[in-house]
Image (cartoon, rainbow, N blue to C red):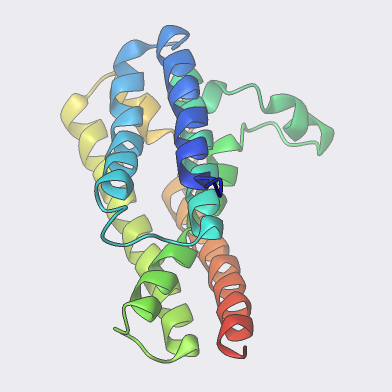
Length: 200
């Protein structure tokens, strides 16, 4: 009997354990609820559509990296993640864990590229790769607007923690830049992976 290794299920189990840890050790449970909501939405979306469209294992691993980091951020709040030792090594005072997470989520452009290409919505590898970058840029813009609106509506510490600007007036622009740079990398990975596949 041939054994079937379900890689996405393994990643889901790892994340669920992290999810429990994140909740029970959350610095501020109110911030945790706000931050974890987008992660839960992504996990549910990928789980519910798994049978209709199964992404490649590489795609699931890439989105898992973002989910894993974001769950850590939800636990500590992004500005309090113990990432300062890394920053201090490079002589940087600001906790840039959130910027690192933005770069990682940008790599998820790979999923957008793979979806439109395998669904034959875009037949060109180059245009599919370009679409992935544009998709992440639009998503990053939407997210920054959402953070701003929530911070204004909340008007308190939870809103500020969710915004996570740490006093940087250019925080939104820098976050979107990191998303875009990550998206470029994700699209490049997609292009070379699927070019190799189509050449077979």
